[in-house]
Length: 242
Image 1 (tube, rainbow, N blue to C red):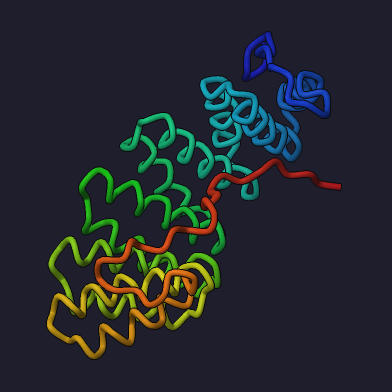
Image 2: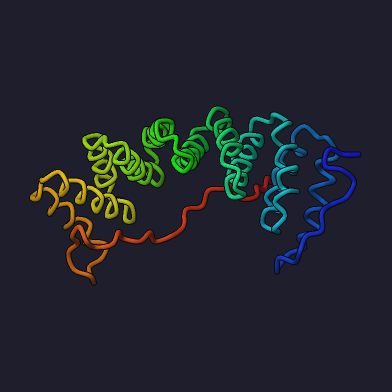
């Protein structure tokens, strides 16, 4: 019996492609025990099972990839497992898995894992640890993730009444000139400055934020927060190696 058991879970149709055939092939590669291909196949099988709506089976596949301790495939499997556990409503287990991804992944994976763990920590009320994780992502300098991490860090600091530090975090996001996160950070910065009585600076911040909503005119503190343009994707897709 291989590490995933004898049978391949039934996979509903996904449209194009033979999902069940792919699952069988991945399972066979996993059961081969090959030091290079088995961990990759387990990772890909886990991702395929998530896409097929079989999260429990996906967890098993990801754990096989993790247990292989392969330097290329175990860290992303750990990250995807953490994301999956979080989506399934198991934040504490997700935080643990994402923490291992932060520790073992390369800089790109570490950047994403730290951000995802920070978001989860905020939801469970552990703001102090969330702040540290947001700072990991900001320090990475990643053009996509650092700006949103700065925005979210500012929001977490406001919740802790650390207003000066929050303003600095929002300003970092504004200065990134990211088309989505900079205007939203400017909106939050404007609100914070307005509440602190700095109306002139708040007005400047709202003018920056209004650039994302020209059809609505200038933003004020009563204007709803600019909506995100897209949903952030966390989990890593299947990998193909030639």
